[in-house]
Image (tube, rainbow, N blue to C red):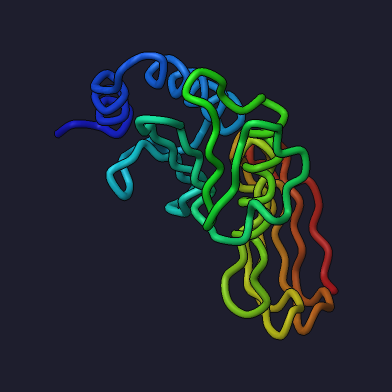
Length: 187
């Protein structure tokens, strides 16, 4: 079985220069911003995902390279698109020899993670800036409702508790980084 990073590497190796070098630079930026994300190929392009949600895809074309934020609405929310780059239909096109800046990649990733977290009914996932899971739980009519868990960046559980229509209810527990119960409170 071929893993995701190997598929991405094979795809990039098949591109001509300067696209190959430009996209390798972009890949390194994405991995530095989202060190725990999964790499793979989606829609025949290198991509990076968090917990199954596509965050970005990218590829080289004859006259430009493109960054795809895996959503048609992310680019409209991000400021600082540089001169020489074009945005159309959910795509950021940039020169074949000039990747986006790390600052822009961080803003694009943050906007996509915020969009993934924007759930008013159903399961909501909230992410740390590095793409690791910060919190998970249920929403009902825009309010926290049901069981919730908060995580540290290392993935350990920090706190658990429940809500009923946005109000804390039942047992709430806080844990240290080793998983030991530190406090328990009932609401």
